[in-house]
Length: 84
Image 1 (spheres, one colour):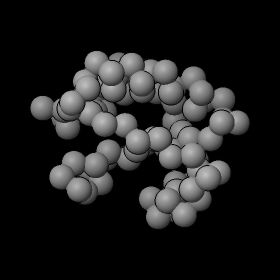
Image 2 (cartoon, rainbow, N blue to C red):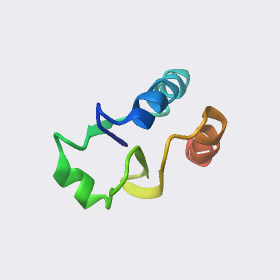
Image 3 (spheres, rainbow, N blue to C red):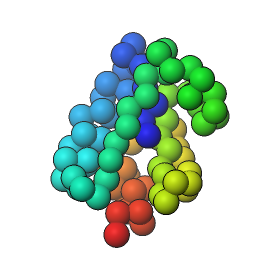
């Protein structure tokens, strides 16, 4: 999950990177984007207090989370263990 908002500069910078990684791994990685302005309850349930924020789910459980716009190599490193 990617938590974001349209007014968030770092969110708009990282979104194309996330979309590229998701396209390269179609069928293995699904990205769900959550606009925190439209879904504040989901952000609260996931403990999101800063955006962009990411939560990785595997087998129905949250297994990794981080906050901040990261470059593509770090995004891929964060996701790597879950893409096998």
